[in-house]
Amino acid sequence: MTELSTLILDRIRDVPDYPKPGVMFKDITPLLADPVAMAAVVDELAGLHQVDKIVGIEARGFILAAPVAYRAAAGFVPVRKKGKLPAATLEESYDLEYGSATIEVHRDAFAPGDRVLIVDDVLATGGTAKAAVELVERAGAAVVGIAVLMELAFLKGRERLPGVELHSLVIV
Image 1 (cartoon, rainbow, N blue to C red):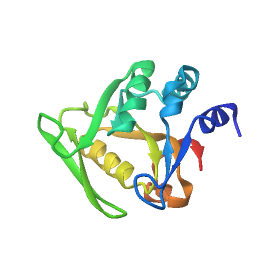
Image 2 (tube, rainbow, N blue to C red):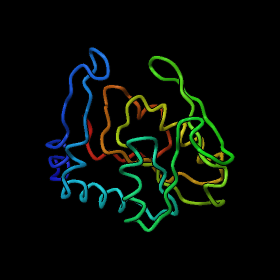
Image 3 (tube, rainbow, N blue to C red):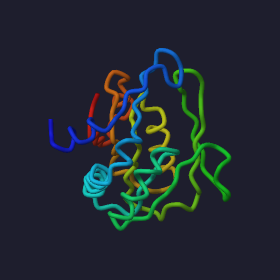
Image 4 (tube, helix red, strand yellow):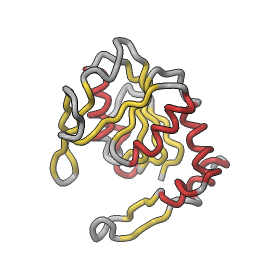
């Protein structure tokens, strides 16, 4: 295990039975509150690729993606839940374990050929990440990769992202 992985895992709190019984929630707020750990995560993610834009997936992905964009000297683009963006959007629906959801991005968020890194806090089943890839590509940009703080390997989200480079800082 790397020094960064240890730093991250030591600052992720397990919360049993949240948001529903049987779920072990991985709370990243202790990591976010630690300036050394947060800076290490941002620096690592910002150094992965030369990109034009960093996409952050609502909501916790915003917390990581915005400082990563700043550090990488790239633009930040929010991917939000349906109905939250004020201008014309592209949308993509996907299935969840217990239903479906739709995310959106502004139609004019990317220039043709922009190189984009998608950042989120957790990769679980991969549905949201796959939908974000579809949105970015439909908007005319190129996804160079997806970067997450933590991958929940037992949910096999990586399998839904063939052909997309995935970088996980920790895998549990």
